[in-house]
Image 1: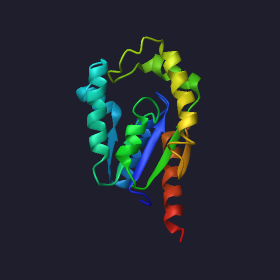
Image 2 (image 1 turned 90 degrees about the vertical axis):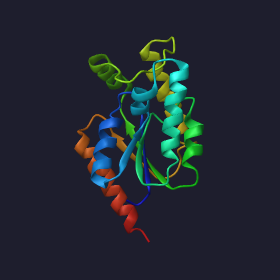
Image 3 (image 1 turned 60 degrees about the horizontal axis):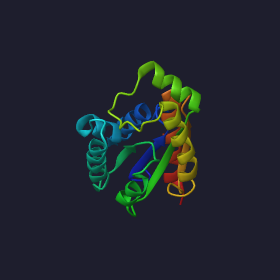
Image 4 (image 1 turned 120 degrees about the horizontal axis):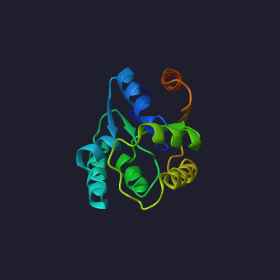
Length: 171
């Protein structure tokens, strides 16, 4: 792997989890997922969310290759950037239209205990989308591979692995 860390980001229901899992398997590294931390430690409250993020950030700080999977936006973005420190990472930005993200959420629901923000999920997805567009040029600038979240996951995996091989071949 050209970089020790792949940071797989995108909106809710963009396809990050499946892509991250397949990339981790192909690269023989582990996945560190905020949703897994939410399932383990979260309870839908603000305190539960803080516990989940504390565990997530502690895992990200470990010095090993990994796929890190989260939205890449929100109130903990700068703490995540701090946890990554000076280690090189490549952003894998899963771009999926908001309407498709919302359709996926309606069909399958959310399988991790998210805090109740007191706003409809449509508004949360819209805010995450706007925040990501800003964060991708500020906090997450640097090497980036864009993946179309509407295509089959295999296409995204192939695109990322091909990009990583090409980057590794650069002098």
